[in-house]
Every structure is written in C-alpha cells, then in structure tokens.
Length: 446
Ligand code: FAD
Image (cartoon, rainbow, N blue to C red; front, side):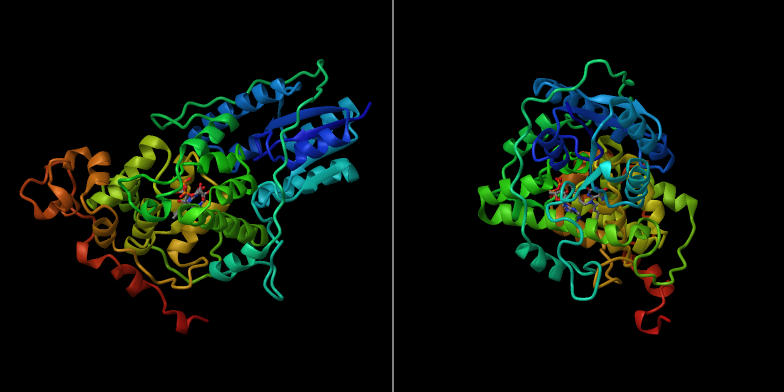
C-alpha cells in the first residue's frame, strides 16, 4: 500500500491539478494537506479579506475532496517541518507540490527538498497557463517586455487540462488543526471556492469584454481574480475554456491572462522585484503621511481617485482601470513611493497577489516593465474617458451624487460642492508636475 501527500498552496482545486493528479495516479492512498504557516502572516501576505476568503476556499476544497472519497488535513506551523513530520508519520513515498514563483515559495521548496530529498515532486504549470521559463528570449532568463512575450506565449505548448480525481482514499486516523479564521474588512466578499469559481465563469459572458473592460461603471470584467490567486480555477484550464468560447471578447480576455503569466515569469526570475525597483530610476520619493492617508482613505478631492479607493475599502476589489489611475496618482502625481501604495492594496485586496500587484505597481510607477516609464495618467482625462457620465463616481462617492453627468469629476467648479468633500490635494492642472521635476531624465541616468 503506497501513500502520497499533496501539499496544497495556491492550487485549491480538484480540476486540472497536476500535483493531485500525480499523487492519485502514483499511490493507493492520498493525504491532501494544507499548512497554516505563521511565516505567511509575518511576511505580510495574509490580510483579513484574503484569510477569510481562503478559509472558505479550504472548506470548499475539503467538501469536494470528501465527495471524491478523501478529505483535507490542515496542520499548523512551519510548512516544511509540518510536511516532513506528516511524511514520517504516514511513511509517504512522495510529496507533491505545485511550483511557486515568489521568494517565499522558492525558500519553502528548498527546505522541503532538504527535508524530503527525492521524495519531493515539484509540478510546474499549475499556477500559470505557460510556466515561467517555458518561453525565453535569446540569452535571457525572462521577458522584460510584454509584446514579445505575448507573441512567444501564443506559440508555447500548453497542457491538456486534467480531470478531477474520483476515487481518493485518505487514512482516517490523522489528526488535523482547525481552518484559519479572520473577520474581513470588506462588507461582502465573493463566494469562495472551486464550485463558486466555476459558476462565476459559466455566468460571465465574454462577448462584450473587449468593448467594456475599461468602462468603470459597466463593471464588465470577470471578477475571477481571487479564484485565480488561490488557484480555485486553473489559469491553464481557463485559457482552454475561453478559447473554446472563442470570439473577440474571449481573445481579449486571454490576453489579460497572458499579462498574469508575464508578471509571474518576471517575479520568478527576479524575486527581489517584490520590493526592489525592477529598473531603478534613482527616484527620491517624497514622504508625506497626510497625503498618503488622504489617498488611502479616498479623500484626495479627485472624485475618480476617491471612488477607486473607496471601492477597494468596501469590497476588497477594485476595477483594473481604477487600479491604474489610483496607482498613477500616488506614484506619479503625488510622487510617493509605489511600495506604500502596493502595501495598502495588498492589505485590502481579496485577489492581492505578489506577482500581479507588485509588478503592476512597478509598471505604473515607471520602475517596472513599462516601455514608457514617464507616462502619467491624468485623473481628469481618465475620468472623462472611462466614466463619462460619472456613474462609477456616483456609486462610490455618494456625497457627490447630486452633481449632474460628467460635472461630478470637477466638484471644485460647482457651487453645489458639498462642504464635507475636500478640495483637490494638488492643483488639478499639475498632475505630472512633481514627477517631471523630481525624476532624473532617463538619458542622464548613470
Ligand atoms: P479580468 O479583466 O476579467 O481579467 C481576467 C484575469 O486576467 C484577472 O482575473 C487576472 O488574473 C488577469 N489580469 C487582468 N489584468 C491583469 C493585469 N494587468 N496584470 C496581471 N493580470 C491581469 N491583479 C491581481 O490578480 N492581484 C493583484 O494584487 C493586482 N494588483 C494590481 C495592482 C495594480 C496597481 C494594477 C494596475 C493592477 C493589479 N492587478 C492585480 C491586475 C488587475 O487589475 C486585476 O487582475 C483585475 O482587475 C481583476 O479583475 P478581473 O478578474 O475582473 O479581471
């Protein structure tokens, strides 16, 4: 009788799960394991919205494993130690785990390797549709620019999605810990888990995505990001499902999933980019706790920025266009360090993800992979373009709701500006000024 352990990390699903599939195929008994590791909390990866969502995903995973004949075992402590301890307890012949991309995941893998030797099986291609390193430019260890990556990605081989296992058997007598708990700061989180993720995909229509994905009020994007972050849906399977739907919308949607793969392959090659500038510009970021607090709390006096920040605080999620313009406002208009903005996002986002968050922040701040690092997104132009009638602002900044149409974006011009709503934090016509005066031009960089 052989036994294998599957260590679940960011792959909380039964469908298209290479680690689970390999464990079931190679052993008579399977112990699905999740370790609640205090190091994740200490590193700042755990935040109330994500922990609450994670707890629901684990409950759903357990229910699905039970339906397939097994169950989820939860243990608490250092992941490598707990996994090695369980392997000794059960005499496991193999421990299967999905490959990660963060520095933390790499160190976890190394420690598991030291503890388990060649009993450890690391599965590539669980987190992304195309694994980091599967496509490479000549002589480099990753792509630093999206467009050539996208072209190479389209030619890359992809796995056929794996079916969920049916007849799992997990020993009865193993002692587990309770699921993690947390009280979310958001009013309402999405339904957690694999079943909810599959339902969300089935109910979401791709047809209008290409036209509507930047329209703030239409809210026409998939909202699948939390499920992708925790692996309730495999990115690989999602690409297959979208391609099967076909059409212009599905194509545009797959392109966004390629952005996700792109950022993951950057972080895999440069784990330091989670904190360090990917392309240093020798910025001398300003420090201004009051401006930072106004941005965080959605009271900058720029309604479109405040709407995004309030959507984040209330729901733990923000529309991509709002993420772009609020991040640009912090890093380029206020000229405050992108790390302080990224930390705030990570604290609230239910989809908060090291690769996507940090590298998108770097892209916006001009220290990342944007080929036009000094571009500034003017919040007023963005508001006029992506929320022309002001419906998005009206939803999230209700004290301005009485201002008609697009006039809502410039309340300082209206005699009906409510007294409690702040005046703009910086002059509305100066949104790129601080960056232009403080940042050393690229051609004079050392
Ligand atoms: P859809 O438009 O339906 O896209 C489908 C999927 O594609 C998303 O779920 C996501 O996995 C991926 N995707 C879409 N856009 C991007 C992108 N620009 N980069 C990488 N992947 C993308 N996404 C996160 O998942 N976690 C984060 O922590 C995160 N932080 C961000 C911070 C900033 C400053 C910016 C500008 C973007 C950030 N994004 C992040 C990317 C993007 O905003 C979200 O993935 C998207 O808004 C999620 O909504 P959706 O699932 O409805 O997206």
